[in-house]
Image 1 (cartoon, rainbow, N blue to C red):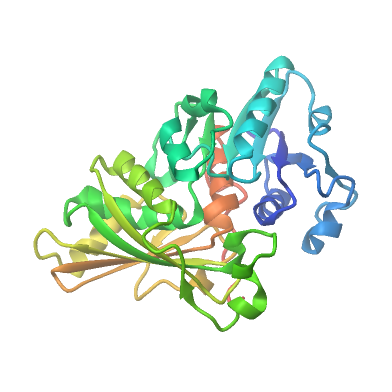
Image 2: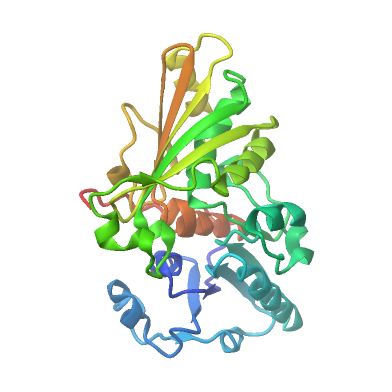
Length: 353
């Protein structure tokens, strides 16, 4: 498909929305029709995101009740939602209903947590709220693109940023049978992972030159990784996860440890990952250890391995806002529209950020 596909971003004034806009600016097939934000409605995109001023000169944010006016009836639509957890589902349900009434053929990729679990009860237990659109759960699938060959539904719930890095590190190992299906993961994230609204955990004087764990063994991405790993590997997996706040803005680094079922060499372990991601354009098995600066602002995931024969270690680094959110969502949208998976995403990391 080479035609331009009308595109709408809901929740476009946050960090993930800003990254979606940046990626759209260089995409050969998706054309922005509406950047939706009630809080920024009427403001030029460049007034909220100065780095995007020239890319979207003359375009302004629109309110939720106005975006459909920018879409022709009986047309196609790529709809991204970067709305908050717990609010996105109802917004998406209303959008899908409105599209159906106007004959609009829509694919949705949601970056919130609202469609990351197949079962309503599980989502409500983890997020301690009522789901906003349980009737749509079986219309969505949640997975990283690298772990799902065919998508037989119209819409996707993108995994969380920690879950993306952790799942990419976990699944080949569990699937190989080299270790038992219990993993211990330590992860570090940059401050943008907490979103655009200021709070204690992202306030610069608190975050700068600081490092600390939060929600140890109680983070909601752990059950998400368990569900994703079991779906992709076929083995029920137990995940013990300790996240940390790092003194940088962008990036995620995770370190996974597991016990080997029998002695495994580093070469054997590395081969598992090279085989698993041989056809994955955004996952590279690297020598040494992954570095955040080598992936920040790109859609790449760098993975490396180590073992002493009895204990296996897998390390992965991604950009939390790109591969872990907007870039992964764009990768999925490319697939939903049968576009090259790399369309608009083949930029290298800038380095020295």
